Amino acid sequence: MAKILIIDDEKGIRRTLREILEYEGYEISEAQDGIEGLNEVKLNTFDVVFLDIKMPRLDGMEVLPRIVKLKPDLPVIMISGHGDMETAVKAVRDGAFDYIAKPPDLNRLLITVRNALDKSNLVSEKKILKKKINKTRDIVGKSSGIAKIKETIERVAPTDARVLVTGKNGTGKELVARWIHEKSARKNGAMVEVNCAAIPSELIESELFGHEKGSFTSAHKQRIGKFELANGGTLFLDEIGDMSLSAQAKVLRALQENRITRVGGDKEIPVNVRIVAATNKDLKQQIADHKFREDLYHRIAVILLHVPPLDERKEDIPMLVDIFLSEICSDYNVKQKLLTPKAVNALQAMPWSGNVRELHNVVERLVILSLSEDEITEDDVRRYVSPSDAKEPSGFSYDTFSKFQDFKEFAEKSFLEFKLAKNSWNVSKTAEEIDIQRSHLYSKMEKFNLKREKAS
Picture (cartoon, rainbow, N blue to C red):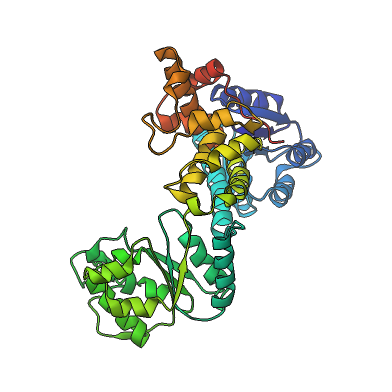
């Protein structure tokens, strides 16, 4: 539920705004002057502030820059019965989100609040995404296979040698590639990723080398390719075993000559990139089947790094689980949970065909569905994590439910709890996403006793 602070010296205005906004489901706090309002902003967290301009002791135009300094991302909506265009422009220039004249028009008021909340949510999401993008997770584990990978990265990364990373899906090949870049002399340059398996064969050349305007039907403007974007940095060719033979020939030429030509162009463009490639395929078998060029293989496989599957490094599972638990609880803003020793042993005993990626998904499922607020038990693992060859869907044991209605309510509660946590317990956003009335969602939350846990 969004929290809104109203700072206004007129009691009638505060009461009117409170009635309108509470009816819309917002939580309202009040302050009768600028000084009291500043204290509220310092001590509490708000999603939007309404700030009157003309007030005794400290007027709104004096309060505004102080709020902006305290909480730069907090949207402030100025309100005044003495408004003019010059004041509105100055308020926005000083950091206000918008300006509304008294008496406020109801529709404009509610639209402005929604826009301010959207901005606040976007700012929060941007911060989370930047944090995730800028932070490269450590390569976790003490097994011999992981120790060998870390040692090789330390020796290889400072050079410009091309590296081929092999391993099954979900083992962490991209993470290895990122650390090669992070520890290289090119770390201040870009690391550009291309998933060769996700791009249609007819578009891969345009993706890698770019194209000139008009070079084909949908080429309405010039496009810069990944080789140029990675100039001075690292180009990560993920799933290179799925690249078409024609694209392989052009990549080989680019690596031989350090030059590329855009599709539809004739100008040669010099490029300086380091290639790190990854694949889950046996490229030597691909070569034997005439699906991969042997000369390209020898160009990209100067250094070979194999990432072992999780089933070969089960001693690393406790460390991985601890890190995933911490990250997931933080992302969902829920109380930190712990796995009991028996739960960890149960996870270690399971087959992991999906490797580290599958383990992460399982830990996320356990965080959401486990019955206790504090710990995840062996019983939770048995109930929500089924082996790959189980007959029942992973995540459920039908024996737990004696009646169809019990299962139905369990599934409904789990779904709502997941969606609310995903949206940081924003009821309006969740109701819109799952296409139900907000009042209906409130009723369901009350029925299932769904409440946001305070972070400990």
